[in-house]
Amino acid sequence: MKVKLAETIRAYHVKGWSPATSTNYSFRENGQIWVSRSGVDKSTFQAEDFIAIDENGCVQAPYIGVKPSDETMIHVLIYRLFPEAQVILHSHSKNPVLISMKNDKVFTVGNYELQKGFSGVTTHDCTLQIPIFENAQEMSYFEQILPQRLSEMKQHCFIIRQHGTYAWGENLFSAKRHLETLDYLCECELEQI
Ligand SMILES: [Zn+2]
Image 1 (tube, rainbow, N blue to C red):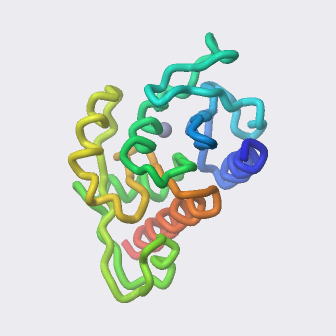
Image 2 (tube, protein in one colour):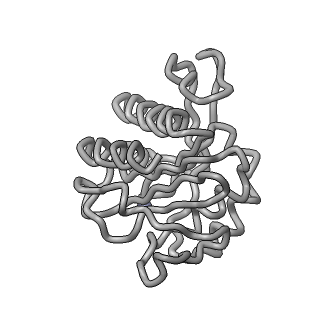
Image 3 (cartoon, protein in one colour):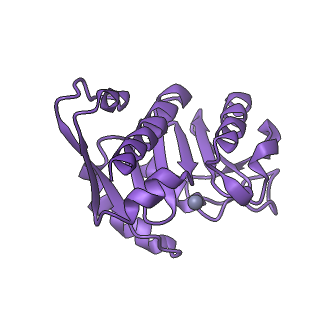
């Protein structure tokens, strides 16, 4: 998983989704959470740049002293709330960032064929709502808001205003589909405005 996820991280960097060392990624394997360490240029991200953390976000040996991403707690919260999640991807792509500036609490989108990229969506003939959260620096905000709006996250993703997106899945393939579907839908809606 480390090697494949590192490849995805480098590919997303090429798409412009992680400028200036930003974004973070994680996976869970045999109950162990691995998260990207802080401050790595994502164009050179390697399998060795993942560090082990426990279910509360504390760094585990032999990585003690290595700084995990600042947003590690968001990963921990997603794993707590969605037991099926095994991979979490985060993007700073401009499309959802711009969409978040034109919408309030949700991004509503409908009738696109690619909506079926979200697991559980079987037709283009429906309207979906993706939650938008505020860009709080305090992780206590996410500890509160994620459980409160749990039922809105049926598409396995959310947007943080003027920041980016999080998407997850039961494996890397599925997490990638969710992240890329959301980005595509945001891009289509922006081009209509
Ligand atoms: Zn971020």
